Length: 413
Image 1 (cartoon, rainbow, N blue to C red):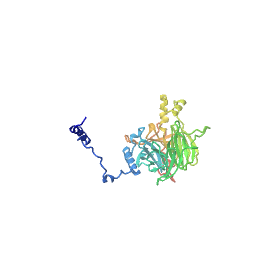
Image 2: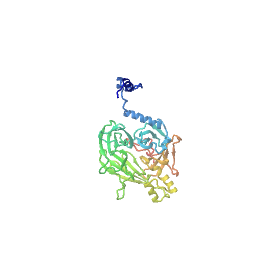
Image 3: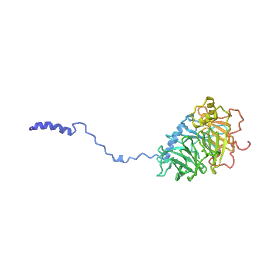
Image 4: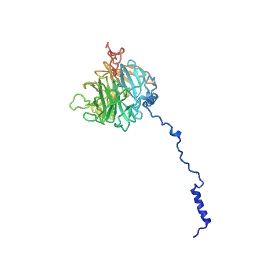
């Protein structure tokens, strides 16, 4: 069939129009970057100083600077944890952040008047010897950067401690401890916590006392403490005194405490016993607390220590609360005659002066809470005589040649 020219025009004309866009809106072309766009600077990289300022701002939002009382928020289970230490002859309590989404470290510290319980605010700082958890920023923990070939944990959390002379820092990342110079932040050495005499289980804390590093590790049922020298030499776990089975001491239902610059201790089962370990020699000694008679059967207490959720008869439950609950996880520092102990659980916010030989409580010191800042000192509920004043803490940074002038343990008693 022949096509007429007019027919060809009618058919092809619409095609030409459609090919040219059909009269619709012309598609916009991508805009080429201008010279000024190319010269725009990248956002500045956050420095460790920037991160420190951010942590400080978040910390003071929780505890305002200058506060002379404990915020009631610290009573919450997920709140920052109170920890006790000694700076020179001063007893110091700090609130240390436990929130694993931020891990701010110490958010506030206070000097404690051990006569009245009064608090004086001081700038938050790392507690020498005591471990804490910190966040990695890329490969660095608080400015202490791992070697390029070192692995960073998948949760980006490091365990960190400052030596008790504040000269060195140890960072535990995965299975390796990295030693740094505290001032220059230069990496000095590394060692594995595994191997012969090394730790088993999941590391939960690292501490440094004298020339010894201690690592707490949880194996699911117990939490032994493993001993290392800063050069990486593994000494092994701290074992219980007595017995032939070489049972390992465990901080579960107890605590690891830094008594002074030459002694640490492991508290067991709510301070039923305290095993002291001398950091220079490894010598151990044991103190046993005389427990009041109670209604609990032996198998009931045994079950509770192995499984805290165990249901106890009401009278036994009350006995446990009064006898053990406040001492599970308690911190302690040593004075010349007594131990100063930061209590937990139902007595959080209180300090107890405990006899360094019998572990008997001699006196209670109440720190002020911000909702009822009464503070002060109360005698034992039993009404037994109390000494004239509380024991001061042992010095953790530098020993004094003589007892402090206001040391209530020195002389006359």
